[in-house]
Image 1 (tube, rainbow over the protein chains, first blue to last red):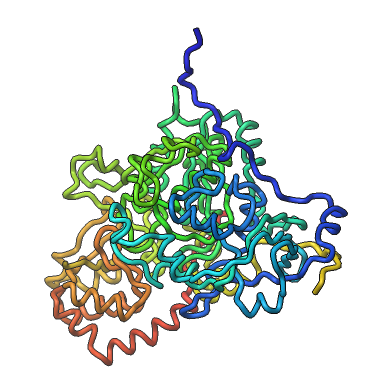
Image 2 (image 1 turned 120 degrees about the horizontal axis):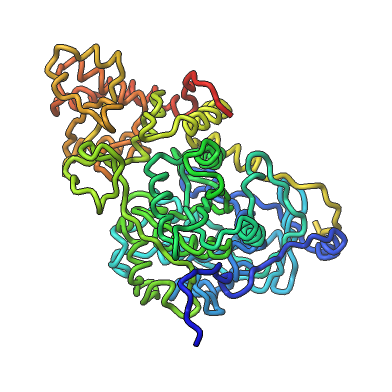
Length: 461
Length: 122
């Protein structure tokens, strides 16, 4: 008789197989691009103030390198409708967000393309990827934005107030061009990551190899868009106790790299700040690894957590920690929306059960954690459900710490590791500012995280 | 719903409120590593601050955060001037002349904040 082992194994990729749409053979790449219609990728700019808020190249990368497996390209109208109705791809696999390659009517007229044509996407002036157009369809950006994130009337379980232009994710959809070019993509000219991004680039296949090389059976993912304070560190350390017959072997930090909200930390400091946590031994490097995913955050709380689950399962993680206000901004969603999703589902989003209990759902295990605070009575950082001194507890606040940093005050070590603070100061000196501001957004969109090698192809323009 | 706003006190700020009634309101944070004064902000004042400074927000603790540095600096100056942490502090702080001065300085802050003088331990 065979018993089911209590030991957990690396889950399969979402959809069963990792997507790999990267052409590594130059001759083949040049042939594929020959005769295609050229299009220079440009950032999506805010419909409100014109600042860059998204660059579709990051979505091309995340699709082609398998982060978004089993998604293979930009969505057709039917696929987007399926996402908005029940958060599923047409193949049935769960997926939270419409992934749309958008252009304006004017751009479409100039491109003069139709179904069956091939588009050569150029990045920084060089060939980068091709898009085989399966469908050209039109949409109302505001309608897609509203339906993507939900409304208090239609999604009362989790949506607390109507989304508007102050929500960065809603604004991304709202600012799209209104014409979608749907179809499969291939990267034909592999971008070269610049320092410091190159150290953290572990696409799913490579991440799985690295996990295997390290001998980790169980790995818990930590989502981040922040430089870590000690509250984050305690979350990582304590959530990692949830393994199988022993604590998780590894903690995989996965930073979301892309356009962010004004006032967030800059991407370089986020990556190197997390790196400092293990570099200086606060978590042993034997147990900790820092990686990144290219994605312009939609700040979609429960929906974003579903995407995080997909990405990290694809990367080979067995568990995923979810805290309060996961990938949230403002008070649009209930602060525990993500935990509601992973505990009982959100029927109004077409998710009547948690993602792991749905057909074609996820295999990654959620670890729902509330929060850590400083308790002056216990004299230590304590878990909110364990400590009985809620009346005197001092909660961590990223905003408070950012305010402290902006005033030029070094946060005390009990809330912020000095080596992590020094990483912030390092990048503060580079950009003359410690956080994302308009100048950083413009510079980032001009420079991006990558460079591209010159490649000669005979495109149509 | 009333919110709160905290002013962090370094050594020089603590000296400036020594001997005033405000000194009794100093609170220890995080095991005494930080000293702060917490002011209660009536809802209408909180909404006004959020409107005047678009990046300001209410954090998970119910505190108004991410206001410009100059706003917090001026807030402390008014506390010293009035020797109080009551609602009159905000009436003074948000007077048109003072507010426009704060906003003018805050606009420059979006472009540049001087980095502190600490060594990178690379």
